[in-house]
Image: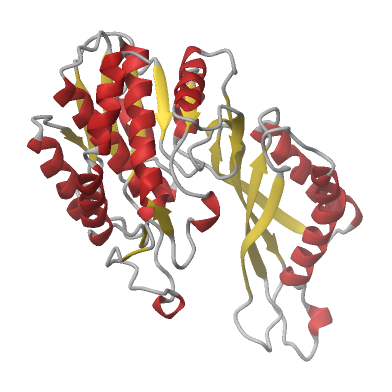
Length: 395
């Protein structure tokens, strides 16, 4: 490791209390999505960036969902984007939490709070890595971009996708900050949300044979989907990800107990292996619907795709992957390449052919749960990972 890099890491060690303070301030700035008002959290970050004279650009579709773009050495190549999000899921029932989810309590080296791990710790590490690089006097040949966004938890369309579509991000490499226990993830499953409606005919519950029960038709369809598709998914796999999956997330139907329901509606979350396509997954369900139609003249159904997200399948031979592995090795961390179990905004970059990795502090199991927490030493380590990755990619 070069002497300049050693000094950079030493400087980050000296920033530990500053890192903790920034993370605490960010957790206390509620940014629950929905509704998605992240302005207070954004102001915390803007003020910190301005402290070391890095003025961010602010871009948004909705004024209450600002996205920040802070550039070091702008206009030069290569461009390395560090992207993570400041919006969080709701805290749920406060009684299930050990501490108030927005007080950033520290106990035994861990900070507790909604969003502290998913993904405010990653955001803080990115910003503090940028500060360490700027204050070290290191000259980058390329551009480092720190990009906290405000819309990841509900799809990313008003955050990362908006910025890419608008041309405000044009990276050569991307590091996504999400929960990986500081392991290097290069694979992520794709996602598709499907809405299915079944239709029937109302009648009085005392004479149900006079109508067509849309809920019964839906039950029939879901059972066959499970029989025909669910069993196949269990047999599929990828060395770096969990199996493909299908979850019936919501179901609605009927208007009253004593009325035969004429509509029923479900939303299904389907996770795709990197080699699967949304078109293939949709076709599987459409074929089941067609099979029932042929045997049941009263069966009527409609399928809509609500959302698709491409998988991430970055080659292990990509330059950014090799650099991340060298950084982790020198920091005494695992250089093994893994898959990311959840979904991230990395898909928007990957579908444009931009080499993308995912790395950040905390076990992904604690995200979206009561008592979400992060080990503060791990956040400092992530800051070192980001700083060294930037320096080695851009010098």
